Length: 139
Ligand code: CMP
Image (cartoon, rainbow, N blue to C red; front, side, top):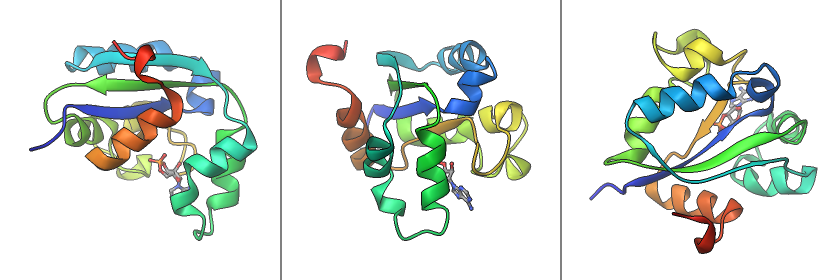
C-alpha cells in the first residue's frame, strides 16, 4: 500500500525569488497537510550527503553547490498516495517538459534550479524526512 507521507524542499533559487509562499499555498490547496517544516540552510557537506545517491552523475558537484547556496524550506507532507500525487504536482525535472499547473512549470528556472524536490519513493520519503526532522518535530 502506498504511504501517506512524502518529503519536499523548496530550493534556494525559489526561496530567493520569493516564491515560497505561493508554492506552499499550492501544496496545501492540493490537500497536503504539513507534518513538519523548517527554514534552514544545508552546509556543503550536508547537501553532498543528502544527494549522495547522485554522486556518480556529472551534475553532482553543481547540484551540491547549488543546494548549499542559500536557505531552503524543508517539509514532510501528508496525504493519501503522497509520493505519487506530490510528484504529479511538482512536474518533470526539466520545467521545459513540465505540464501546465505544476510547480516546476510555474516556478522553476531550469533543470538544475528546479524550484522543489519531491521524494521518489516511500522508502526515500522516510529517509529524507529523517535527515531533517526528529519524531518530536512531526505533528
Ligand atoms: P531533485 O528532484 O531534487 O533530484 C535530483 C536533482 O538533481 C534534481 O532535482 C535537479 O535539481 C538536479 N538535476 C537533475 N538532472 C540534472 C541535470 N541534467 N543537470 C543539472 N542538475 C540536474
